[in-house]
Every structure is written in C-alpha cells, then in structure tokens.
Image 1 (cartoon, rainbow, N blue to C red):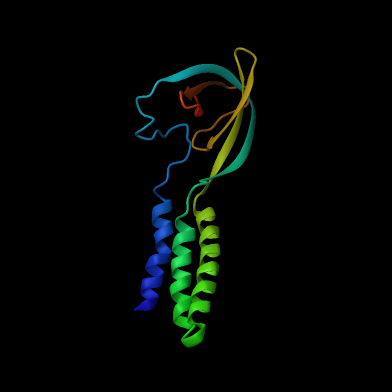
Image 2 (tube, rainbow, N blue to C red; image 1 turned 60 degrees about the horizontal axis):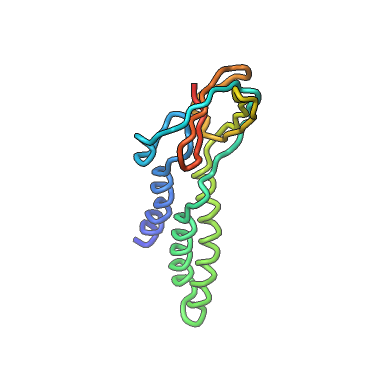
Length: 151
C-alpha cells in the first residue's frame, strides 16, 4: 500500500509540470489574449538553440521533500525516526528539484533580429516555429515588456 502511495506522489510533479506554459510564438495565456502589443518588423540575423526552463516551479522540491520525509520516517524506526525523516526530506527535495528541472525544460531558440530602425534585439522562446537567417519577421511586444517573434 505504501509503495503505491509513494508512486502516486512521485507522479504529482509530472502531472503539474505538464500544465505550465512557456514563452512561445504560437501560444497565448488567457491573460495575454486580447492585450495590445506593439509590432515591429525586422530580419533574422542569428539563431541559437537553447533550453527553456521554468524557473519558479517548486512542485518537485515540495513533493520530493514530503516523499523523502515519509520514507525516512518509516526507515528510521525508534530513535532514528526524526533523523531519518529529516535526511529523507533533504534527499527527496534535492531529487525533486532535479526532476522538476528535467520535466520543465523544453527546447527553445534564441532569435536575434535586426529591426527596421537598425537596432538589434534577441528573444528566447519555445522552438515551436521554424526561422531562417535572412527571413523577415514580426516582433510583438506587450505592455509588460514580454516579446515574441513570429512570421
């Protein structure tokens, strides 16, 4: 019974991690939909593959800490129970952080654009649209400073 419980908790970060939305040329959140965006035009002058990782997710750390604490409690019967719980929570939290990072990292692209006013800017976003050097693109910037490159 306990192993099924632990497995269920281990899957929690996977489930929650799948719900996060990262910057993309083709995806808008409900908060972004309908907002005014400034449009600038330019030419792609550089492309670089990057990994985009959500930096504020705590799901894995928390779930790992809880699982580790419960497992450590079970293993550290008697006097070692508190020590086992603390050690398990620390180890579980560390494993959870690593799990979170691997789950929430997605392939991205850094796009360097020379704008029509001769300024050069770079934007990193999910690699959900193909770009080529020399291609004309739009740079959409919202009032909160977030930007995306699209065709």
